[in-house]
Length: 283
Image 1: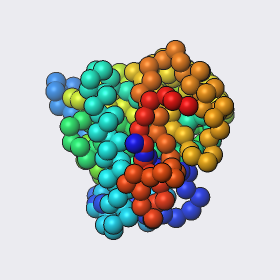
Image 2: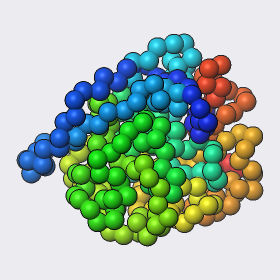
Image 3: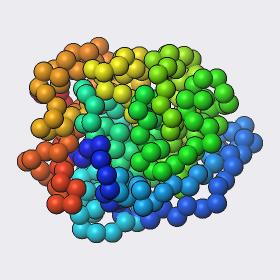
């Protein structure tokens, strides 16, 4: 199966439903202490036009090309949700062998597609903190950046926010940091994931990680999640790089490979220019 997610250099268009950004809602900490009641998180505005340019598949966006791209993500979503359920997994880390292979946009669009399934509460954490992209793609400015939380400021609830999409919660940063390895290794990441598991009735945690061949953060996080996913790009990812990445991740549960920019496309469209493929680890 195929998947799309190149790092967009410029404008692009989104998905099939408009995000109506409502006035910001503050997180009500009282909801956390009521058993079985899912807390609500503060909602922050996004730049919808910028998100469209960045190929973010927001809800309520029309057009045949966008619909075709969304269909590809739905197929990818179904495969991953089935694998999560059959293995009793909650968390997936998404990485790539090298940079510019589309993993961050893939993570964001997959999270949006999973949230529309409504069978789970999706949490997307941007742990590619040397080059944070999720908030940048959305034009979002969190009140408490994930880097700040991991540095010891605030509670897990403070790091989480909504963009007005039902069943989707995010945490991310705008400013990069060169202390990413130290931040992901500290206990506060585990506290955040534990908080999510304890407050969401049926959580799915997607984590955008840096390329596995570039920094050590993916290897620091992989033992703390249920499985990892590799995003590769046809025409860009070298075969030897894919093999090295697979070797580095060999000790951890592996959920599959997402192939971007595939020439032999299924469900591809002229607007996005990508196909979607899901598969295991054949190089």
